Length: 334
Ligand SMILES: C[S@@+](CC[C@H](N)C(=O)[O-])C[C@H]1O[C@@H](n2cnc3c(N)ncnc32)[C@H](O)[C@@H]1O
Image (cartoon, rainbow, N blue to C red):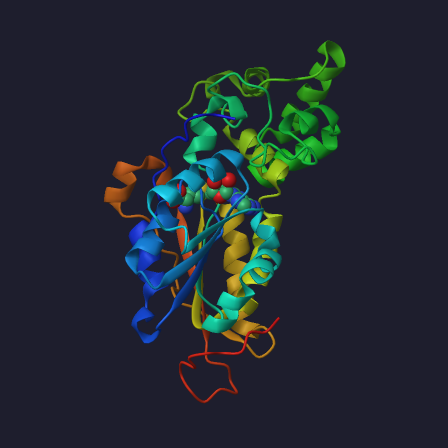
């Protein structure tokens, strides 16, 4: 457990708020969810924008939760911001198990935000093992209290060469995936387990041609991304959560997703397209932005980590059978 939660710049904050609050004057109460509380930047901005807003937030990281509880109290929003210690893949159970009364009274959710991936805290707090810039045990679990989740060390030392190569290729788009995988297996057979970020980063660097070893981007970047995605099942949970959120949106409600790499964005883009085309039962959806929203040059200058962000917005629209454009209390489909 770390004492200090590292700063996190909330990406595309203004754009998210504007979309979440579009048409908000039509409602006398507002109910939102933020699946990725992190440092609370988006969550606090959502509840502060309008006192009638209530927000159900999630995070699975013990540091984010501890810091979040303090922030919520400090900002005096305990009666409107409900933070849950849960993976957002349990969205429906948590929301309906704890807040069914709010959801039903509001006729569904007005908006749900996901700001995917890890926070700056994960990278900057070297002891968590996400960064190859600090020597630490290879962990990479966002939910580090959960012993049922395999760590990066488990994966590196247990997977076969073929599975490691697939992982680095599929989740890291790593050109030297097979070479790196073979080297890992050779190393652990010869010298025992690979335990630390430095051990792994050095080994990966060694697999790169000499002239590419000292470029702007560290050779270990892609494999570290792949490991992080595997440890936290980051891609699987996107599909899970979208499928659970959509049936709980009220008419006019939106789901907003910020992704940070093409693997995430591909999933979001495809699912949003499918739901726009085929709907969900009688529910209809449309992509509110045809092209994803990206940060302005000013935002990128202020926070270089935002440069790969893409925001997509899917909106629930009037069902074919409904006559009113915006039914105030639409039926929630379970
Ligand atoms: C990019 S940060 C969010 C930052 C936040 N929007 C802010 O303004 O501070 C992502 C956060 O979501 C959490 N997270 C990522 N995947 C999660 C999941 N499947 N379930 C719950 N929390 C998750 C991470 O622990 C991290 O704190």
